[in-house]
Image 1 (spheres, chains in turn orange, green):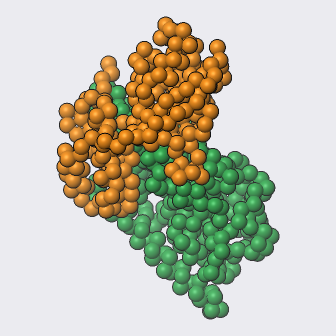
Image 2 (image 1 turned 90 degrees about the vertical axis):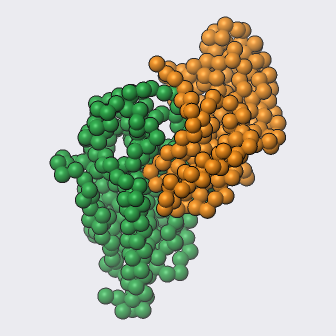
Image 3 (image 1 turned 45 degrees about the vertical axis):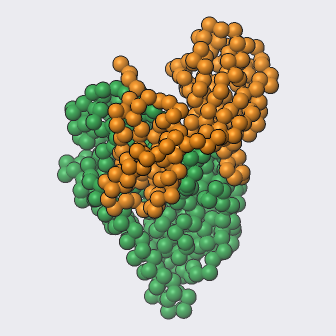
Length: 223
Length: 335
């Protein structure tokens, strides 16, 4: 049986000599995630830290030089977490036009059937969800979005698709996603953004940043 | 200018990797065998991070359109330059039009061609490494193919006289004297630090993780090595939240057979991690052939750090020695 890893206290572990992972305790929530963003910002300025990459209620530190005494870094990290207030930055509101269904969203009809809703209603609920960017990660520009209407949640596909195109808007469990680059995915793809989500020549290269709100608009729905 | 005459689509331009862009989902990419690239750059007097051609499929033929000093490190590919044999881990001059041929490796599995001045493709997000998922970096963001022309960078100090000079291969400089005594042939040992979810496995599976000679399956590449062996069992199954991962992380998916994440891995994952192959041993993985076997050897953080420093010191010493040799060459007093 599967249980979520509801840690009762923060967990710090090493990834070899290359990185250190901090995992926040408690339920998966925006409030916790806001503290993670604060922690990541604080820690990324520490000496010896190359980058602090926030993910889902956790943050990974990579090193310029591995710490001589990781225990001391761990203590500092735990103290910083205790002091971390939720990040109050108002993210931007980013409007993302989407073509839903057809070849752009091959799983729209499956998801509608799973949700026992007409596909138009799935599109409406997806576009009206107030989706917050929790993290950018996994592959270039890929956004993990929280705040999906639970009526259109759907478990990941048993057999992943070999390729979803860049800009795919998808649903994996209670998470929504906006893919930055083409590649395999186990998430249910219901549409595709018609603006670029990742551009290596741009600074920053990703369209979205943690804390941003995404408003999807149905540019077209193919049924 | 370097011309690719013949290669399977498994060669690419790589440097030591891209950072710090994990927070944009951009993996580090970079060479699989950092020690080989650093050695090549040290022999030629290049800056440590200049880009090379990583060659993973053989045979491979390359032409020097202009005369240039180069180094060939990594796998021993019975290389020839204009038909004459070239020792492995060797730097030599190539005349204009010289043809370099690499054959199936006798030892190791990835070869690295560095040139004086480096492979001078544009730097994207701070690196010349090819990012395949994002189709950027390297040469046009893709695998190399016949007919590709790659510019070599400007160089001030790279006088290498024929027949050239070499470095001691890392497998003799860094023998795995910590490996299990009962090692079977065709088995690579790498040192592993236990990771966050080590304790979630049954005691029997923890033991078996260290005792198994895991087979590197054919579904292994720059993104990761999928291993085959008796599946490991979880004492407790949990659904992890997605979190950052780095090359070397050993994940165990529900099937129970470990996957080692490598240069082109995703920046985040959600499978439990049983351990991490230490950074100092990633070159050993890079040179382990498909179908061969892997043994994991437990190590302390302190020893992992020492191993990393030994590599750094070795490269620094090699760089000094190569510099002396090249200055003798340029003053006409070559040994």
